[in-house]
Image 1 (cartoon, helix red, strand yellow):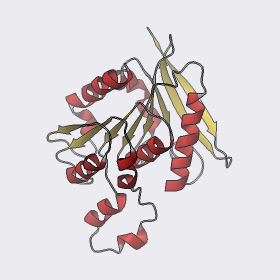
Image 2 (tube, helix red, strand yellow; image 1 turned 45 degrees about the horizontal axis):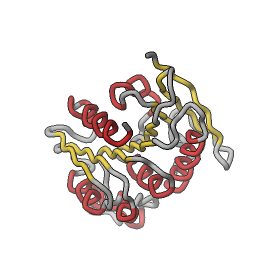
Image 3 (cartoon, helix red, strand yellow; image 1 turned 90 degrees about the vertical axis):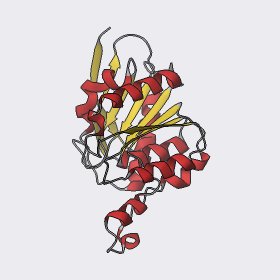
Image 4 (tube, one colour; image 1 turned 90 degrees about the horizontal axis):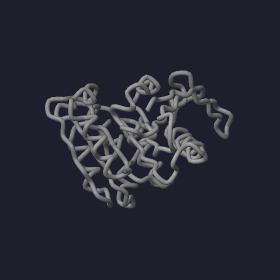
Length: 227
Protein backbone atom coordinates (compact mmCIF):
# COMPACT_ATOMS: atom_id res chain seq x y z
CA UNK A 1 0.00 0.00 0.00
CA UNK A 2 1.42 3.40 -1.01
CA UNK A 3 1.29 6.80 0.64
CA UNK A 4 0.14 10.16 -0.63
CA UNK A 5 1.40 13.58 0.49
CA UNK A 6 -1.24 16.27 -0.02
CA UNK A 7 -0.58 19.99 0.30
CA UNK A 8 -3.04 21.68 2.66
CA UNK A 9 -4.09 25.35 2.65
CA UNK A 10 -6.50 26.40 5.40
CA UNK A 11 -8.10 29.82 5.81
CA UNK A 12 -8.93 30.63 9.41
CA UNK A 13 -11.97 32.62 10.53
CA UNK A 14 -9.96 35.83 10.68
CA UNK A 15 -8.65 35.31 7.14
CA UNK A 16 -5.17 34.07 8.11
CA UNK A 17 -3.88 31.41 5.72
CA UNK A 18 -2.17 28.35 7.20
CA UNK A 19 -0.09 25.89 5.19
CA UNK A 20 0.67 22.26 5.83
CA UNK A 21 0.57 18.73 4.48
CA UNK A 22 -1.52 15.64 4.99
CA UNK A 23 0.21 12.27 4.69
CA UNK A 24 -2.15 9.33 4.31
CA UNK A 25 -2.32 5.78 3.02
CA UNK A 26 -3.73 5.71 -0.51
CA UNK A 27 -6.40 3.18 0.37
CA UNK A 28 -9.09 2.93 3.02
CA UNK A 29 -10.40 5.40 5.59
CA UNK A 30 -7.64 5.58 8.20
CA UNK A 31 -7.54 7.15 11.65
CA UNK A 32 -5.75 10.48 11.89
CA UNK A 33 -2.95 11.92 14.01
CA UNK A 34 -2.73 15.72 14.18
CA UNK A 35 0.77 16.94 15.08
CA UNK A 36 1.58 20.19 16.89
CA UNK A 37 5.26 21.05 16.82
CA UNK A 38 7.68 22.86 19.06
CA UNK A 39 9.08 26.34 18.82
CA UNK A 40 10.70 27.08 15.43
CA UNK A 41 9.71 23.68 13.97
CA UNK A 42 8.75 23.56 10.31
CA UNK A 43 6.40 20.63 10.82
CA UNK A 44 5.80 19.68 7.19
CA UNK A 45 9.34 18.24 7.10
CA UNK A 46 8.09 15.34 9.24
CA UNK A 47 5.52 14.14 6.70
CA UNK A 48 7.89 11.63 5.10
CA UNK A 49 8.49 10.03 8.51
CA UNK A 50 4.79 9.63 9.33
CA UNK A 51 4.56 5.90 8.47
CA UNK A 52 7.50 5.08 10.75
CA UNK A 53 6.12 7.12 13.66
CA UNK A 54 2.37 6.63 13.33
CA UNK A 55 1.96 3.38 11.41
CA UNK A 56 -0.86 3.00 8.89
CA UNK A 57 -2.60 6.18 9.94
CA UNK A 58 -2.99 9.54 8.28
CA UNK A 59 -1.02 12.40 9.78
CA UNK A 60 -1.70 16.13 9.50
CA UNK A 61 1.11 18.67 9.85
CA UNK A 62 0.03 22.33 9.71
CA UNK A 63 2.49 25.11 10.51
CA UNK A 64 1.55 27.64 13.18
CA UNK A 65 0.92 31.26 12.29
CA UNK A 66 4.20 32.86 11.32
CA UNK A 67 5.88 29.48 10.83
CA UNK A 68 6.86 28.02 7.46
CA UNK A 69 4.50 29.27 4.75
CA UNK A 70 1.71 30.13 7.22
CA UNK A 71 0.76 33.78 7.57
CA UNK A 72 -0.10 35.75 10.67
CA UNK A 73 1.51 36.20 14.05
CA UNK A 74 1.64 33.42 16.69
CA UNK A 75 0.09 33.70 20.14
CA UNK A 76 -1.52 31.24 22.55
CA UNK A 77 -5.16 32.12 21.87
CA UNK A 78 -4.63 32.17 18.10
CA UNK A 79 -2.74 28.87 18.06
CA UNK A 80 -5.41 27.08 20.06
CA UNK A 81 -8.22 28.54 17.94
CA UNK A 82 -6.38 27.52 14.78
CA UNK A 83 -5.93 24.01 16.16
CA UNK A 84 -9.69 23.68 16.71
CA UNK A 85 -10.43 24.91 13.18
CA UNK A 86 -7.83 22.53 11.77
CA UNK A 87 -9.38 19.63 13.69
CA UNK A 88 -12.86 20.52 12.37
CA UNK A 89 -11.55 20.68 8.80
CA UNK A 90 -9.98 17.24 9.13
CA UNK A 91 -13.05 15.73 10.81
CA UNK A 92 -15.20 16.77 7.85
CA UNK A 93 -13.08 14.86 5.34
CA UNK A 94 -14.74 11.76 3.96
CA UNK A 95 -11.40 9.93 3.58
CA UNK A 96 -10.59 10.15 7.32
CA UNK A 97 -12.15 8.17 10.17
CA UNK A 98 -13.26 11.11 12.32
CA UNK A 99 -14.19 8.78 15.18
CA UNK A 100 -10.49 7.89 15.61
CA UNK A 101 -8.47 11.09 15.85
CA UNK A 102 -5.33 11.29 18.01
CA UNK A 103 -3.36 14.40 18.96
CA UNK A 104 0.43 14.61 19.22
CA UNK A 105 2.16 17.66 20.67
CA UNK A 106 5.85 18.30 21.18
CA UNK A 107 7.29 20.89 23.59
CA UNK A 108 5.32 24.10 22.89
CA UNK A 109 2.88 21.98 20.90
CA UNK A 110 1.91 20.00 24.00
CA UNK A 111 0.26 23.16 25.32
CA UNK A 112 -1.78 23.39 22.11
CA UNK A 113 -2.65 19.68 22.04
CA UNK A 114 -3.83 19.64 25.66
CA UNK A 115 -6.15 22.60 25.16
CA UNK A 116 -7.50 21.09 21.95
CA UNK A 117 -8.17 17.80 23.76
CA UNK A 118 -10.27 19.80 26.22
CA UNK A 119 -12.33 21.23 23.33
CA UNK A 120 -12.63 18.40 20.80
CA UNK A 121 -12.99 14.60 21.05
CA UNK A 122 -9.71 12.71 20.80
CA UNK A 123 -9.19 8.97 21.20
CA UNK A 124 -5.78 9.53 22.78
CA UNK A 125 -3.02 12.10 23.19
CA UNK A 126 0.76 11.78 22.74
CA UNK A 127 2.88 14.42 24.50
CA UNK A 128 6.61 14.75 23.85
CA UNK A 129 8.51 16.83 26.44
CA UNK A 130 5.37 18.34 27.96
CA UNK A 131 4.94 20.71 30.88
CA UNK A 132 2.18 21.56 33.33
CA UNK A 133 2.86 25.28 32.90
CA UNK A 134 5.09 27.15 30.45
CA UNK A 135 5.35 29.85 33.11
CA UNK A 136 6.91 27.38 35.55
CA UNK A 137 9.42 26.32 32.88
CA UNK A 138 10.31 29.95 32.18
CA UNK A 139 10.77 30.70 35.88
CA UNK A 140 13.23 27.83 36.14
CA UNK A 141 15.24 28.92 33.10
CA UNK A 142 15.19 32.65 33.89
CA UNK A 143 14.88 32.87 37.69
CA UNK A 144 16.33 36.40 37.78
CA UNK A 145 13.60 37.92 35.58
CA UNK A 146 9.97 38.87 36.49
CA UNK A 147 8.76 36.11 34.18
CA UNK A 148 5.13 36.33 35.29
CA UNK A 149 5.04 39.86 33.85
CA UNK A 150 6.94 38.99 30.68
CA UNK A 151 5.28 35.71 29.67
CA UNK A 152 1.98 36.55 28.00
CA UNK A 153 1.29 32.99 26.84
CA UNK A 154 1.44 30.68 29.90
CA UNK A 155 0.02 27.52 28.22
CA UNK A 156 -1.28 26.23 31.55
CA UNK A 157 -1.82 22.56 30.66
CA UNK A 158 -2.14 21.68 34.33
CA UNK A 159 -5.48 23.49 34.51
CA UNK A 160 -6.95 21.26 31.79
CA UNK A 161 -5.36 17.91 32.70
CA UNK A 162 -7.71 17.03 35.62
CA UNK A 163 -10.66 17.15 33.24
CA UNK A 164 -9.14 14.95 30.54
CA UNK A 165 -10.17 11.29 30.68
CA UNK A 166 -8.50 10.18 27.43
CA UNK A 167 -5.37 8.00 27.51
CA UNK A 168 -2.09 9.90 27.27
CA UNK A 169 1.45 8.83 26.43
CA UNK A 170 4.08 11.12 27.96
CA UNK A 171 7.59 10.90 26.54
CA UNK A 172 10.48 12.72 28.22
CA UNK A 173 14.23 12.73 27.81
CA UNK A 174 16.24 12.14 30.95
CA UNK A 175 18.85 14.66 29.75
CA UNK A 176 16.36 17.39 28.83
CA UNK A 177 17.66 20.64 30.33
CA UNK A 178 15.02 22.91 28.75
CA UNK A 179 11.82 21.20 29.91
CA UNK A 180 13.18 19.08 32.72
CA UNK A 181 11.49 15.72 33.34
CA UNK A 182 9.86 16.89 36.57
CA UNK A 183 7.65 19.25 34.53
CA UNK A 184 6.40 16.30 32.48
CA UNK A 185 5.88 14.25 35.63
CA UNK A 186 3.81 17.02 37.21
CA UNK A 187 1.47 16.99 34.23
CA UNK A 188 1.26 13.19 34.36
CA UNK A 189 0.15 13.35 38.00
CA UNK A 190 -2.59 15.85 37.15
CA UNK A 191 -3.97 13.88 34.19
CA UNK A 192 -7.33 12.28 34.96
CA UNK A 193 -7.26 9.49 32.39
CA UNK A 194 -4.87 6.56 31.91
CA UNK A 195 -1.23 7.68 31.75
CA UNK A 196 1.67 5.87 30.13
CA UNK A 197 5.16 7.24 30.76
CA UNK A 198 8.29 6.63 28.70
CA UNK A 199 11.64 8.06 29.81
CA UNK A 200 14.32 7.96 27.12
CA UNK A 201 17.64 7.75 28.90
CA UNK A 202 20.46 10.02 27.82
CA UNK A 203 18.43 12.02 25.33
CA UNK A 204 17.58 15.70 25.58
CA UNK A 205 15.04 18.21 24.35
CA UNK A 206 16.08 18.46 20.71
CA UNK A 207 17.20 14.89 20.02
CA UNK A 208 14.54 12.87 21.87
CA UNK A 209 13.02 11.69 18.59
CA UNK A 210 16.39 10.18 17.62
CA UNK A 211 16.12 7.56 20.38
CA UNK A 212 15.38 4.15 18.78
CA UNK A 213 12.52 3.61 21.21
CA UNK A 214 10.76 6.90 20.49
CA UNK A 215 8.81 6.01 17.35
CA UNK A 216 8.24 2.46 18.59
CA UNK A 217 6.60 3.71 21.79
CA UNK A 218 4.30 6.06 19.86
CA UNK A 219 3.30 3.44 17.29
CA UNK A 220 2.59 0.85 19.98
CA UNK A 221 0.47 3.34 21.97
CA UNK A 222 -1.55 4.24 18.86
CA UNK A 223 -2.02 0.54 18.10
CA UNK A 224 -3.62 0.12 21.50
CA UNK A 225 -5.76 3.25 21.36
CA UNK A 226 -6.72 3.54 17.70
CA UNK A 227 -6.53 -0.05 16.51
